[in-house]
Amino acid sequence: MNSIMGKECFINQREEIVELEKSEQLSINDYTLAKNVAEKLEDKYPGWLWAVHVMDGVVGVKSLRLSGQWGFILHADKIDNDYRAVINAGGEILERFKQHRGKFNQTKYADLEMDEYGRLNGELH
Image (cartoon, rainbow, N blue to C red; front, top):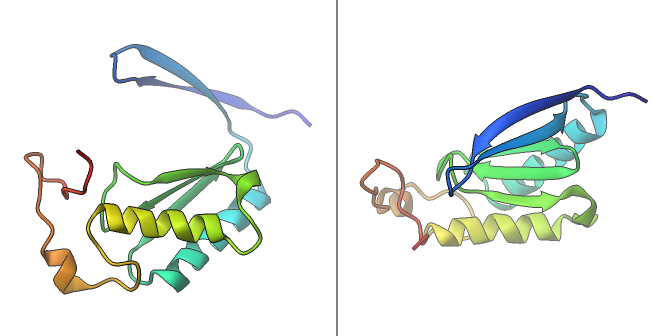
């Protein structure tokens, strides 16, 4: 099976241009995995607006309530049948932003501070 490849350019922290080649062929397995990961996270940590993207064997997850910049990445083939690695990583992201593992709590969320760029300030230092 032939796959169509696309290239994207990024600038890394050392301001070097990096080309990343990715498949543009969509897979029903990727959609299914993304749906399952999002459902598991929403079941365990409801209300956090989980965004899940799967491509080329890599699962990227962010909570849209916390940050468009920070999240976690897992290799799809390392995710176990009960999604324990996903649930653990989701809880770690919440803790990094000083939130409890569990349901979204507006009061605790309102206590978060913003950095000088207007982003939520997690334990990233």
